Image (cartoon, rainbow, N blue to C red; front, top):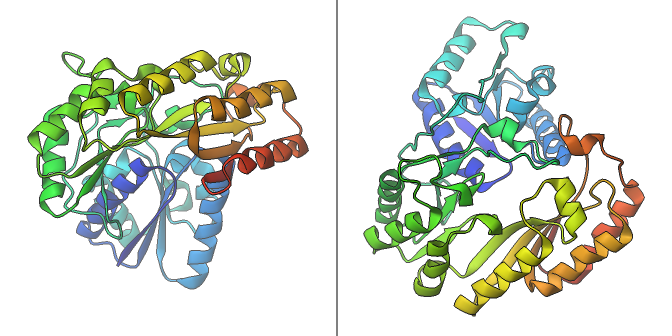
Length: 367
């Protein structure tokens, strides 16, 4: 049996199905795969705690760690005695890599050979692997994009995923049709930087064109949902699709992070406060039933009480309903880790203030 434990984003959830299929096809048995997340220090800590717990429960099982945290800090996991193999984010989707893992387990692997990490800097395309279903999920995920070309000062993910690369429209449509034909009534388009979709493809088709193609060529699909969007990258065709396509779900989760212009600049975001407000107003004008969620960080380095209050005010100005709140903690290798830090006690107070805004709809995660 191969058990896959998934942390983090919807893209990881989509890839976990491929991991399970390839690991089983390679002949692995009594194996646990941890598909890790690196977006927060807490996510890495949770992965390590899970590894220790599962090893206590199944002492004879082999443990393979993959995902973004494995890619960005492989030594953290390789040094754990419970871990038998650390597999990079590119290799985890390769059937050949899992055959190599099986061979290593069959013939023994030295401690210094535990790590098999990829060089993602030169990767320029991403393959979409056909998947029939998602174990334990009532809706299905389709990967349209991977990687990120931006360098927000707080974010480690570009180092875990590599450059932005898109899946051709025809492949995404074919996978969506396959899943709809297998009974899934809702498909979620996923990506690391989904609104960057198509910029690396011939003709540079944008996300709006992809959405239109899916809804046109898969009429049997009742619902199409989008994962997190960067509002500054949303194209005009996607805005029209929101207005005209009832099967495109009226919920957008926005990567906002802050509501103060100076903090946004220090984060190296590409939008300002007014841009976020203008986007939400225009989108809701086109689709009055639209509901917004957003990611927000509390306690970014140098943030003052007044700047934090600007972020709180943005929740009302954009009428955000679902908040995913992160308290900042530095990620090694990012510019924000070298900036003057806000006291932890202050960050926790700000977290509590944000949670009080929408108590039924707020999740709070340490960054």
